[in-house]
Amino acid sequence: MVALKRNFVAVITLFFVAPLVAEYLLGDLPLKLLPVLIVLAPAYGGAAILIRETARRAGRGWPTMLVLGAAYTLIGEGLVTQSLFNPDYLKKHWHLLYPAYIPALGIGGWWTLFMFNLHTFWSMGVSIALVEALFPAEAEAPWLGPVGDSVVALAFVLGSAASFGIGYKQNQFVASHAQLLGAAVLSVLLIVAAFLIPARRLHRTGGRAPGPRNTSPWITGAVAFVLGMGVMSTPSKWGWAAVGAMLTLDAVFLVLIAWVSRRTEWSALHTLSLAAGGALVYGIHAYTAKPLVGGVLGMRISTTVFLAAALCLVGLGARRVHRYRVLA
Image (tube, rainbow, N blue to C red):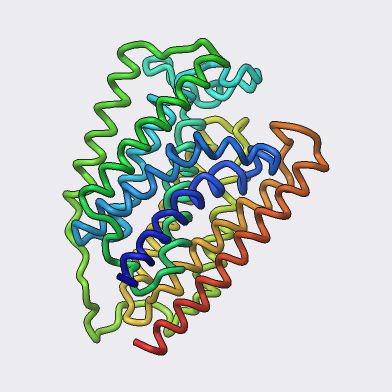
């Protein structure tokens, strides 16, 4: 009964942490628009829960969850908001598709890759890692059963439908049938690919993988922060050079983490450190970004509140993981 209660709290926590990371910590929405969570939580939180539950129930880990996060990017940005195809998204005249434009697909190479980074690594990855650290005893186990999954799936569909309706009212834009079909097919292919990845081993061997001895979580967190800042700071005006730069940063991050995480010393604290680095990137970026809604002062106050909350989550997660390791 205690475990069931913890699982319920974990699910509710992720339900709200995901949209708070994706939109508020990033600096897109201020404190005064917290009521918008009624739509954002089912869309973002529902997706994060489904991704985590599907992977954990199948006995799989972060490679599967990241690929599922990429599939979510196509669903969220290709089918729901359709920002991947909209030449004037939100009527802001940002010309998001112009850098590295691909006429045959009607998409911008820079914007598409940027969205894959934001949703795969931050909206889904950082959110899931932060919440799993809060519940270390159940971090690798499913939190819900079939009924719970069905309820979350329904919430996700309803939240996505509401997001589409709001977006359409603002933009009156609908992508072409070919673009929508392409996004849908590619998302399905990514979902299939996520489960073609070999299942992770539940227990590590005593051998050491190549790499520095006793890699500190501070180091892995710093690496995530530096590479994340690189992604967020890559100027879109570089066009295809920006695409190349982001791909390089992504590759370096994935290769380094795949290499170091094979070590016997790798722990939940290291995973949390990556999320901490990513959360700090979002918070710092929000201080430098031009507010999308409201004035500068209001947004800076909001950023301070959300960054402080994220750092509190990191600290609480680190304490719980450490205590669990001591007692285990």
